[in-house]
Each structure stands twice: as structure tokens, then as C-alpha cells.
Image 1 (cartoon, each protein chain N blue to C red):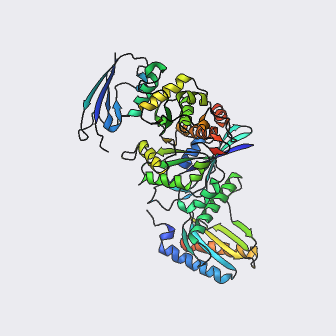
Image 2: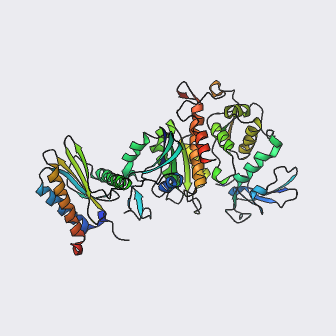
Image 3: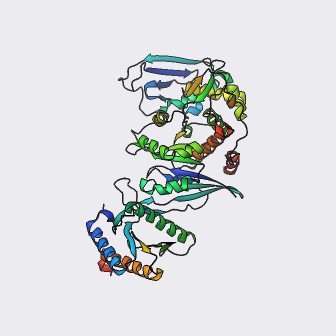
Length: 188
Length: 135
Length: 184
């Protein structure tokens, strides 16, 4: 069976588990534990290993959706799952203390995924007043990675239409990049 | 908001006592730790070879994954995890009724049965210390 | 960030109430949904009024994102021909993606946008690379140009960026198969 692995990464509380639950056609495998850091992010549980969901493209092809824990102390899971993925949806919650810094941190951490495949960024909780705009994120990414054009969308991770857009954009981007691969190197 | 276990001095003291007694019972115990479900170390036996906080995170992930497998297979709950290596065993199990996990590394000079027995005893002891009324 | 020449704009298609634009906040306000914007308007009355960075907003914020209005106007104005400010020989590359979750779009728009993110392409090259109609490629370049999200180059074509060879990864065609599977 052909399979394509898509990673969902981002800081704790960004909505990775919810996003996979929104997209998955199977009951998502969850590895939640009671969150003892309620002062950091006020949610009852947190992912401590991975989330797993699927979309069956056909009887012989599936898209596997993996969510990684957001906290750096679980970065060994990032290493394990990074290797298998062709692309990543990076979710950042706009009401975090410094969401742009978090976005750049995760882009750096998962940079090989962008080099190898592609990244789409989803900004959750953008309805909260006072957070950076989509343009602010794009500008910050360009400052650090001038050759990178990362799609940045505002998303509600419970909204299937928006999450499908993010996923389809990621795949579209990966295929467009492939179309410019000649003799094993990418024409920028 | 209650104090999390890894910041609660009473729990830390009890956990240290349990691990110290565990080592006294079993000389082959190389390393042991009590950790929160979400991967914070409450206390561990001193061991220069092991990064305690990293081990706590990994143990938390393993525990959650084993619970997920048991759930997926509809086999009840995961009772304990064994990782057998050339140098010994890693044994891991939950502290009954608490959001804590005991993770222990035994040398290869220990039998699996004894290692499991001591681990269970220690986990039970920790449970009683945290909830003496239920004992 | 202070804008050097802050402007207030009013755009009034014949037969409609004006659309008010406050450039400082990248926002607009209209009494109707944007879907009602006439795509075949022949006359639009445009009025501008200078303002200052410190003056209060023209309407209650956040209002609507100006990108959405510029997208609609850019796609539909010029009747499928290149916008008057575009120059023959120019090549375009995307500087940033538009926020498509808040903009009406088609799958073809996504494909065109994705390709524009890879290299500088002329309208012809973009159409060929995506197997899209030349008019579709023109319209999206008009829109992105109006939104100021294109990098424009007048350098000659890069021979490696000619019409795209077949994709080389195992994901070939996954987009199409997934799209069909999800009914998109």
C-alpha cells in the first residue's frame, strides 16, 4: 500500500490534536496525559507521544496524519516522526506570548522537512484581538528564510473545510516543487 | 489549582523514600524514577549515566503508547511495560490510582520475575503513601 | 508602522453604495457582502482623501481585510487582459501566499499560486506549467499584483524553469486523487 505521512507540529495548545481529529476518517489514536503545566497552557490534557489519524485515498493508498507533542522535552518524538514525513502542517496559536518566535523556532526545528517536502502554516485563534497578522508571519519568515514562500492561513482547527484547504495546499506545494526538480536538484 | 506532583515536596519526599527502599531490596537496580503522566520527573535515584528529565519524557511517551495499544486492541489497560535489552530490563508501570508512573532499569543479573515483583510492590507503596485513607 | 502617504478611498460602482477603504489598516467596509461586488462594472467612481497616521479609523475596526477586495477586483477587472500596469517581458514570483481560508477561491487558484511560489514565471509560462487557460493565469497575476504580493523580475527566462517536466516523487498525482476522494 502506498502511504504518505504528514506531520502536524507546533507549540502546545495550537490545536494539532483537534486538527487531526477534524481531518481523520478513523478514530484518532490519542496519547493524552493529564497536563501539570496549567500555568503554561490551560488545558486539561496534553499529547505525550503522538496523535494518529488517516485518510484513505483508495484501497491501496492512504495519507497518515501524525501529530507530535508540542513541548520540547518530547523532541525525541519529533526526530522519530520527522524521518517518515513528506510534509508538515505547522500550527501556531495566535494568542501565545510570542507566536512569531514560536513559529520560527518550529520552522528551524523542522527545516529538513521544508527542504525535503513542504510546510504550510496554520494560525489558530486568530480571532483573538491583538495578535500578529498573517502578513506579519509571512514577513518574519521571509526575513529568516528569504527563499521560502510558506503558505500562511488563519484556521479554525475544528473546521474541516479550512483544514482540508491546508492539507491540499501542502500537497499541491510539494507537487509543484517536484515539478521543478531537474536532475535531482531544485531550481529555486 | 493544586500543586503538580513534581513540585509537591511531600510527594517528592515520599517518592524518594520509596525509591531508596526499592534499591535496598534489589542491588541490581541501576536506575529508577517516579514521573508524572505528562513526563516530569518527581524524583529519581542518582545515576550519572542517565539524563533524568529526558528519561521521564520518554517514559511518559512509552506509557501513553502502551495504553493506546491496549485500548486499540480492546484488551483492558496496560499493566506494565518491559523492554528487554542485552544489559538488562526496563520495567515501567503506573502507580495505582495516581497520575504517576514508576520506571526502573535492572541489570541483567536480575530475574525478570523479581524485578517485576519489586516494581509492583514499590508502586503500590507509593499509592498508599499518596492516599493513606484508601489503604 | 507609519505609512508615508496614508489614504482613505471610496470606490463606488455605478448603482451601488460606496466601498470605503482605509489603507492604514489594510481594511475596507461595504454595506453588502463582497460576493455582490459587480464583476462586470464598467464605471467605478473613485475618490481619495489624504489623512494622517494619527487620525481615527474611517470605520469601526477590524472591518474586512483589504486583500479580499483587491482579490475580487483584480480577478475581475480588465476583462481577462493583463492589468494596465503590467509590462510585457516581466516575470512574477509569489512573495507571500494570500490567506485563502478567508477568500473565495478555486482549486485552479491553488495550483497557479503554488507554481508561482517556485520560480519567476511569465503569464505564458505559468499557464503552460499548470495547464491552465491563459486568461486564468492573467487574472491571478492581475489580482496578486494589485495585492502587492508579487516579486517582479525583468530578467530573461531561466532555462530550467521552462514548462514543467513530470513530477519526480511518489506523490505524483496525489493532489488529484485526494481531491477526487474528498469530493473537492
